[in-house]
Length: 326
Image (cartoon, rainbow, N blue to C red; front, side):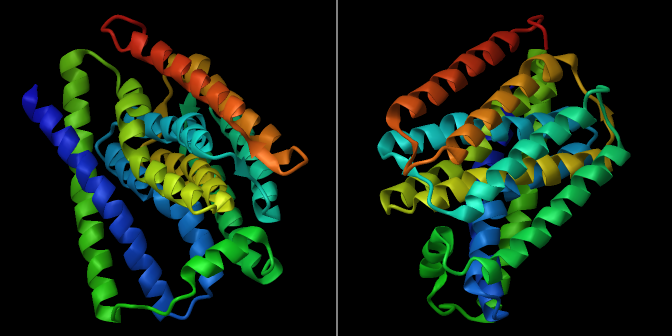
């Protein structure tokens, strides 16, 4: 039992380090390629922090553990809203000024509805994967077009300010950083998947439950650090961009790739326990994001989200007991 736990912890540490390093390397490469700073920032803020979840999903599907990949993707979505956004808002109220993000919130709600429709038959097929990945492709096209349409947007100003400096490292150094990070990312995700699968088998716990709890929380730590740092600097829209972008990427790209590699049946608990919580968290975020006025998320609302996540986690942990319904 010690070896699987050691592999799980080592994998999480490797993912935490390599995910951030990969994003930094990719950003530096994009700057050398003279991509617009705002475009680079939008992609990194929106999707870059979900690279660990993507690596875990690919390995899980390749090793025929799709439940682990699905649990990780859905669990990360719930963690992003119920824990990361809530904890960040407890430090300081989060205000939404970006019109780009106001339009992303309905997209997230639509992606959640699409997911619910596709999994209603308790399966994730390659046809479902095609639909999810096509939606992700359309979203990427929309994201690429934002810098030209919204150069004066609040999020645009924050990201442009962060990405304004010229590259500080050579092209070779940026490429080496990206390659090393990608290798560590692959190794860390492989260790994490093996350790989690082995621990789940020894404990009699399902892959889905492990993905929703241990893996989702572990992969979310870099995003939590990024959001807290942005909140302390007053970059509220960067906080929301991280949460919304990661949620969209997990629902569409991560789940889509999982189904493309390894179509699978979905455990009943995922539809009766986890999907309603995911939809509820998404609806709460949508209502907050579309609400008029300066304040998006204040401490009382953050505490409500945090309490809801705590109740869900307690419910989930209760099912981790062998024979408890997983």
